[in-house]
Length: 152
Ligand SMILES: [Zn+2]
Image (cartoon, rainbow, N blue to C red):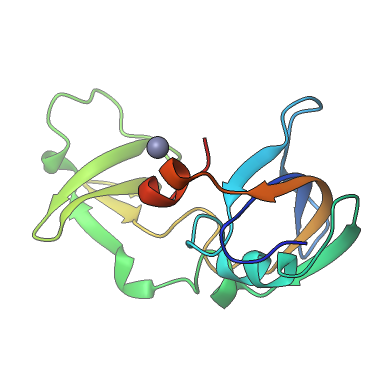
């Protein structure tokens, strides 16, 4: 049974509210994590609690408990001149922006004349997600795993 300090392997398939497939584990590569250390999104971790090996279930996780609500303050317009050395700034490009809080990954969401709109939100921010889960294995963490705070 999954409790704090369990190392869990599970297969998953994630879809958004419209049913679009966002991500899934590889056939022979379940995701492995250490339970109770915020290594996966909180809304999924809480629903894995107390589950047994072999359990299959669907977990609905609201955006706030997945990758967070979208923060409009992270969407900003910057002058295109700031992208020195980039020939064509295009929608969808990713950049690392230097901020007083350290580097932030941003995605270009609009380009208009000499202004570029960038979005620093996680690509899945604001999305309610559904996880199809199948638990493959559950074991106790080793002392080293607990020390590191992640599964090996
Ligand atoms: Zn380690």
